[in-house]
Image (cartoon, rainbow, N blue to C red; front, side, top):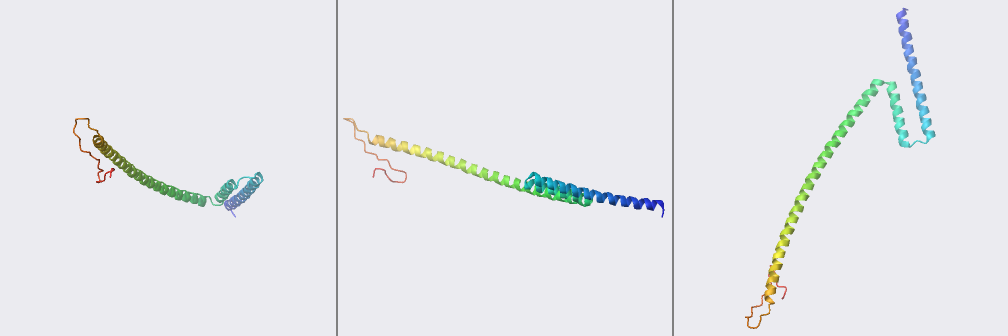
Length: 161
């Protein structure tokens, strides 16, 4: 065997050994962290996050290219979901603003109708009391008697019947 082949074999064995030792180290670190979390009474939510981080670290150590590819794919999917949620929220906001504008328009119309009604009622009451006041006027001696005018409601009924 040539020296180059021997160097290549030794280098490959060295890389395999480093990878195995690295994997064992990661496993030891993960086990130690898990033991520390259990001993410290960490919340289940935090423990789950830490477990995910440890699993991600182990995945990265096993196959960095696949890990990076998976992370990028997950991020792209999350980005698309976020964009869809933003678009939906924007559409909902526009719909709410349109509904608010319609309600404001209806309130304005009701206020205007109320104002017209109050004005009409005020004029009618003024007319009724003006007529009623003249109808209850007692003539002075020597004045002519005026006919008694009774107010009539707009729909033809008199409150004095």
